[in-house]
Image (cartoon, rainbow, N blue to C red; front, side, top):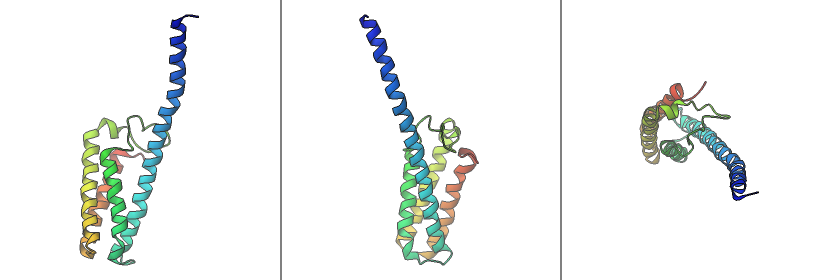
Length: 149
């Protein structure tokens, strides 16, 4: 068997090794994305308790920070590598085919969550209420175009 066969065999082995690694990376992105969205859900709920008078405004800073941190990762597309619309996910291909639209909505969430964080750090209940509404709307705005039902 010549060098050509050895090169072909090495290429096949490389593909066999790299394909699962690529799939794992995609799976990790999906798992990380799901974790981030659970973080958003939980922390929006905690801030909603403040808005509804079930908790004091001094409790809003930590969940507001968590929301802002996730928003930054969404803007950076850390958990949205190309092809991660395949597998156990509700992410629609429009995230990548309409990248400008997705990016604009992600940036709106980042801006709104930043305002929520400022109000939460100031323990300003009226500011928290106003910023919470804007942040929640920005978060939900992605669902129509970029998330499967």
